[in-house]
Image 1: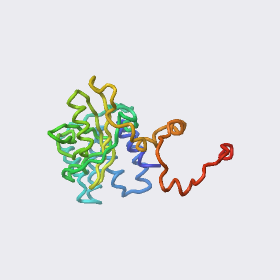
Image 2: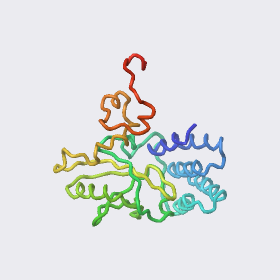
Image 3: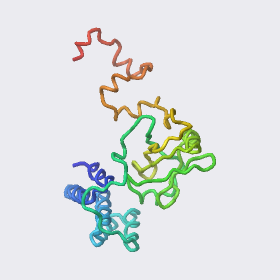
Image 4: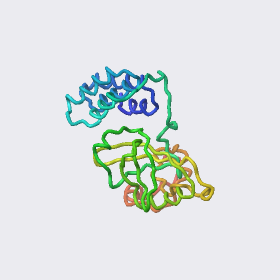
Length: 243
């Protein structure tokens, strides 16, 4: 059982499955704070406020400074969460983190905002991309500042956004010092119809998500690295020997 399965259930808003998976994780590690917070969130989304309250309270008993649990307990006091449909009801484009060369990009933000704000969010949380002056900022659904795109990417996307291109983004992973978001081009402006938002030359970013046969067929024409030279001094003469 891996935590990623429980995360995926939350990303697709399959809250009943999220409850089941996180309960299984907690049978293995009863003090797993991440699993407890995910479980509390799933209960909250399903409308089980009492169970959600008990779960987040348990988190605070284990870690009294846990801002995720504290924020959600506060939300429970004021929210009007209603019971959702039991099956998967995704409001995100599935799969959320499917890499598409030129169309998507995973980015580590710079100049991060308040750690308390960041730690209250979850992987899969939608965020907003906002072009401001000479930078592109990323804000939470509540318009709270989270960070900025690196300067080179900001410069590129400002041009695209100004011409009418549009982007969706979600939190991919986070910890107190690193916040990664996943950006997807949703509309490409007519001005840049033949220009990808993200340079396709960055093929190493997408190698893990590309079918093996395509990786071999579209191998970039680049010089061998030092590591390559050490391990592959001479390529085999007979291709059958490699089978």
